[in-house]
Length: 95
Length: 416
Image (cartoon, rainbow over all chains, first blue to last red; front, side):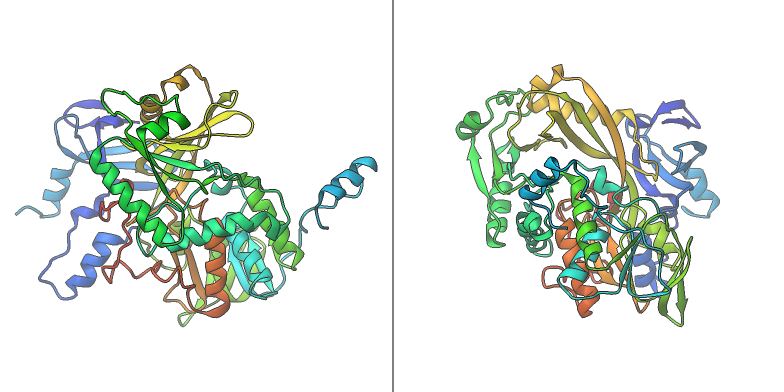
């Protein structure tokens, strides 16, 4: 698989470490009510879809950036690559 | 029909006209006591033990494709019980004992070959870890023996003992481990279940569950609705997709594991050998091909094929311990889809929906577990409570902080 890095261009997937579902960006609020249940679901349960999947890839052997890669789990086709930083900031994280 | 040497002899003399199909091809009935979703090794084993050991007669196995078309026909055929943790080891040792009596039990030649498995160690701390593992195995009634380098040189002179990066210092052997003809396991269980009246229904995809007020009363299939008192899902590799139809999210990701076989060679590898400093395991099939594999690819996928970086990684692992295989040519490679669970251990449990049961999360260790998985699942279905060796394989164990993490890497499925 070739991942089209937004900054570095096309890179071999072997340079990356895969973290899994990009939903991990949405860490629950530890002070909210029902936080224990929310963290259980966050840490352990996965949608694991057959088809389009947004996932976190870490460019370990490159610029060390985190990417959100939208990829098909049926064909391995990569539809979209974003900087995880931009995705997180757009969600209001890191404020 | 009972198989025996005499039967083969007399059939051979009379033109082999007396053989019958090994199982029927029935249409589904309106209702069953137990419906097993998934006609792989585990599903067929469950049907076999339900009908033969627990006396449950009115059982159906629903299979989307043909029986044995999933991972029971795609694995590297290794059996072993060299686990360590209390929630796992007694279960895998029960599986090993069932393997040992399996062929006599279901009257089918599954070519169970206890040629031994050898885990190599390369450092002193790794030796200490293997001593601990071996003791855990002995305490659970399994066998284990620690070999030093001299003993190993005698048994496996072809290993690269003086490798500069990963010198081989010794190994932990389980002599009762070995290999089994994987397809025959599915066929043997199917035959034994069918003989007791289990309906094995192929080309019958489950498209939904009939759930009302928290009770599951049946399944929707490509061959119509079928009612059942108990529904037992057993579809490792597709668990998340099937259980999503019942509205459940699972602590599972689907990953691809690749396997490889070389051209046929004269006997060179005595048993199963695994690399201790990377992920590589190899055995030699009775046809002579080297059957080997390594790590999963590491990304979520439902495609039954992997990518080249892992091919390279696996072959490097092989070359690090036995450079002689560098001359062998690769004949075939393929991939199977694994239920990678959050702690690397499986589930055999009821769900929060009454009547709906779940068996899955076998990671890349499902084949060796086939007999015990079927036996314990049948026990759960017939008696309503888990078998004594499967009490920890619960769906709620993460919520309770009771993970069974053999590798100690936490809730990251692609690291197990």
